[in-house]
Length: 95
Image (cartoon, rainbow, N blue to C red; front, top):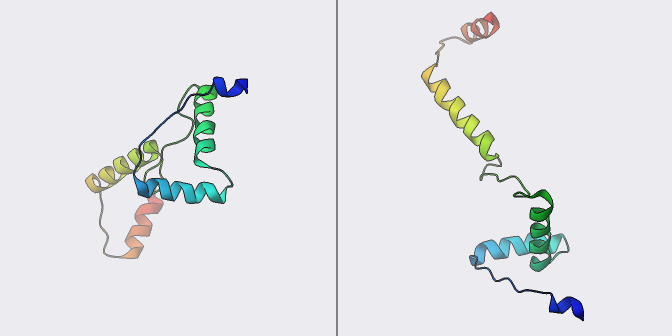
């Protein structure tokens, strides 16, 4: 019973949709929400950092998303157009 004396309560607010989606995934893993949060916090302590990669809705890490955005801007600024596929292939093989 001494372990309970050392316990603290943590309350968080989160929208119902996020909670329901996370709960469904965690249930599939055989884990409850409380255990998942405990594991997350232990990983923060172990890694002394945020313990996972943050990704956007397309699955890209924030760094990869930025590289992609920069590539799109660069491509638009340095774009070439071709009227025939053969011209495209010749240009691609030049390098």
